Amino acid sequence: MTSSDLVDSVRRAVGAVTDPELRRPLAELDMVRDIAVDDGAARVAIVLTIIGCPAATRIESDVRQAAASVPGVRSVDVAVGVMTPDERRALTDRLRGGRAARAMPFGPDSLTRVIAVTSGKGGVGKSTVTANLAVALARRGITVGLIDADVHGYSIPALMGLTRGGDVPTPTRIDDLMLPPVAHDVKVISIGMFLRRAGEAPTGAVAWRGPMLHRTIQQFLTDVYFGDLDVLLLDMPPGTGDIAISVGQLLPNADVLVVTTPQSAASDVAVRSGLVARQTGQRIIGVVENMAAMTLPDGTPLELFGSGGGSEVAAALSTDDEPVEVLASIPLSATLREGGDAGEPVVLAHPDDPAAVAIDRLAGALAATRRGLAGRSLPFTPR
Ligand SMILES: Nc1ncnc2c1ncn2[C@@H]1O[C@H](COP(=O)(O)OP(=O)(O)O)[C@@H](O)[C@H]1O
Ligand SMILES: [Mg+2]
Image (cartoon, rainbow, N blue to C red; front, side):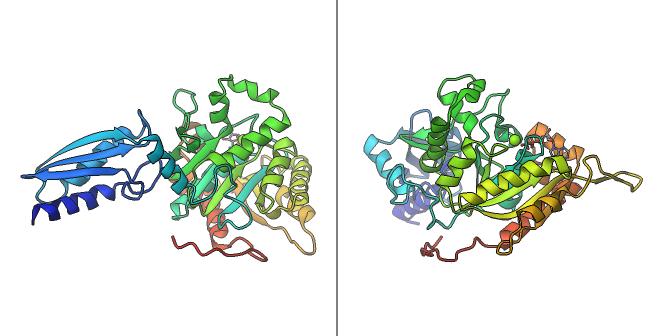
């Protein structure tokens, strides 16, 4: 092999390394600089987006390994630099895919299916179901983003195993573009990450007013780099408050999943939250009944929260034009709860658990149905 062939091979190997946050190959991100190989000794220069980029160590070691794997390379020296402001601007422009800064990437023309998960009241397992659904979809090879919009009780970072010692991670920023942390192959952003940015105690959120919440949700949608997503899930706050209305205005083309327990008392409020979503133009795609009967070791069913709530809600939300069905019934499961407490979603940690099976089946059903594209243009975007 000539020395320029060897340089080309090293460049190809290094260029194929993916940035763990941006999830694109370094070559495409224009992060590979000079490469030289002298008598088997490779010198590789790369640039990162920002100084102290949290992924730096990982990228450096992946680059070293990639270069070392090229036959003919005996040693590798990696020099890590930082992009100039101009280079960074070029990169963020490219990541936005030609969309202007602050433009909405999930509008009616987007190919991303947006699913808002809502419930009437808190504590019905909405976040637990949403986090597991996101992971179950990702396991099927679907590109998933997850937004935690529950301002009063954000719990997605913990459920996804993203908290360290109770602290919610701060997203990396490239100028005004924010990179969502990735957990179990899901890009995650939480309102909790923003509260910390603002330097407030997490409880400060309770005092937030409508306009500020609206701006924050808008920022989630415009300034967070999700890339090309197949599905964007939103964990909504319970009920019909400011956020539900903001999301309805910002994402009128979203599909809505309503989570309820089998208890009648829970179902009335669940119906109301579904109706508010529909008023903004969103489509109710189904009801998920959670905390349904579990089977005890002796085979008898334990109906802790009664039964029938799911079908009651589905019937109340159904119209002649838009029938609404119960898409899943997820049984009570201590394993599901423990997985949530540990930040290890049950669909990964214990896929045979009955609750995990029910959630995975829901993921399969959602993956099989496409977003209704009636009246919407279909931009051709080869992936
Ligand atoms: N199917 C289930 N079986 C057992 N516990 C559950 C189930 N679903 C949720 N939980 C537990 O119920 C509590 C509330 O769930 P959470 O997802 O936080 O509800 P919400 O987001 O609706 O407020 C959590 O402790 C969670 O682990
Ligand atoms: Mg919740």
